[in-house]
Length: 369
Ligand code: UD1
Image (cartoon, rainbow, N blue to C red; front, side, top):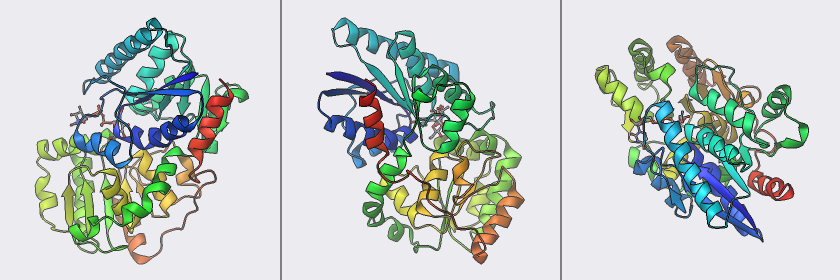
């Protein structure tokens, strides 16, 4: 019997663990334990994803919640350590811990496990923005440095890891597991009544998400972006599901009035997986600073204006539908114009973003046990 612990903590983790858990649970001689750290705890950021993606209830819920980076990381480390020690004391030690993505829970779990000599596999390894002001970059660097199995979603990940001195035998290009979930769910998502409810027509609206400090933590930057979005909405309605962090900034900076000046910017609470995929898969354009949404846009063939100065997912811009805009309101306006004029580039879906990444991941995990 091989025992895997698989960790999820925040919204972007859930669509990645779903197909991996399913694959592992189908294999003989495998036992899995799902650990939810509780980094995200709002129903809309967590429970909805479990229900819609058919993820079983976590075997262990750590309930760490929010806090400063150090606090949150420390709380996850202490709680995971306890889980791993107790399982060993019961005579059921884990053979491996699996972490996905780049959130604080990912790094914290990897550190706790490695120190207890439980080997760690990192899914979505090797991505680098080369921007150490982003907390996710620190999480990626640390997690990869201490994981002994590095599973990459795109060739840049492999190159980065080999360049950092990782041995070829520990690095595997397996493709994008988040796209497994997207491909499984996209038709079901399109049949939701989301567009009708919001009075939108396929191909005629844009989707906006912003939550990174570089876009939302500074009043002038955020107000400049909101002003362009409001202006463009006169020609193309926009839906904007608002992350709790962004909502708090809009309120504290007193910027709600900019958005209220147009009824064509629809502010929504964070959406569940199916409603959101219903929106993105039929959008004319996506404006975002999310990591995952850059990839989903490329897989869906929808233009993606990436509100970041850099990206750790270069394949989405080189060949995909993404363009780096930074936090530049004028560049945002120019690119939205290009989309509206039909002048925006076409993209192609990368190799191995084919719905079979979880199968390859399970093969690697079991082949190396
Ligand atoms: C985290 C990830 C980020 C990811 C994002 C997706 C890190 C460093 N960041 O950022 O990479 O893109 O998730 O959503 O791990 N909050 C709630 N309800 C919740 C969770 C958080 O209201 O369920 C609020 C709290 O005020 C909290 C703040 O959001 O302090 C930030 O939450 P946190 O988990 O620290 O980071 P995110 O910004 O969500």
